[in-house]
Image 1 (cartoon, rainbow, N blue to C red):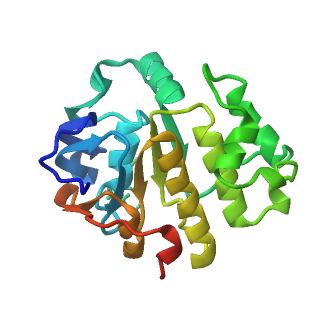
Image 2 (image 1 turned 135 degrees about the vertical axis):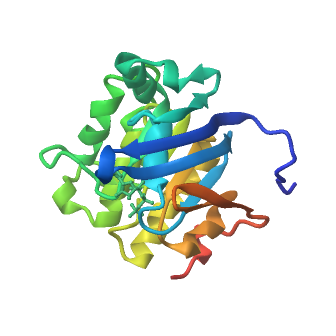
Image 3 (image 1 turned 120 degrees about the vertical axis):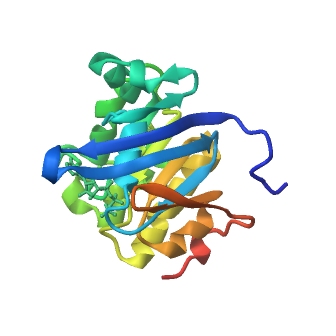
Length: 242
Ligand SMILES: Nc1ncnc2c1ncn2[C@@H]1O[C@H](COP(=O)(O)OP(=O)(O)OP(=O)(O)O)[C@@H](O)[C@H]1O
């Protein structure tokens, strides 16, 4: 069945009239200028827009890494605005997986050990082997980051992000440092995670081709949502070309 905007969906994030101002006086930057948006359970949303349009600021706010200047964000039935630093830390630790452009793996630990660092402190984690299996890297789990390609390292980072079974996965330019062939393998890993675990996923990219794997595309411009595009027929990552 094709998803439509009017269909009743479980709202994971309810973002209402969010603004973000960095700095003050003449150096003031209005990074977000009234963003109102819902993100739905189990969907992949791709965030597109020119550099400086507010995508990372938006992702950081819904991920509890930053706070809005005004407006509110709720995650499920929790108001993120009402959380203090300890509450936000608990929210990030329990509910959010982050994937960034750079992988931030610990060089002296194997792929398995990098993932295990997270599973050791999470409440209901999967095993590191299972997490690496979902991103199709089980056979390389005893390798060190320096022995892995960029795409493989990014897949370890994805395994690390999902091993605690987060409700949401937030990805800021996960393929930004990769060539197209490797980037497609990483996108495949994110789609596999979404299909196998139902993780609600938001993905920032500069690559318009990638939008075709999404359920919805959120177009940012000048700190606002310019357009929300519903993708009727998603394509497989293997069909992507750029
Ligand atoms: N910590 C900060 N202090 C001051 N200004 C900031 C800060 N973070 C972001 N900005 C500014 O806010 C605006 C929005 O930035 P943001 O990183 O959200 O955009 P973006 O769409 O993610 O851009 P890009 O695609 O280049 O990553 C930019 O003008 C940026 O310079």
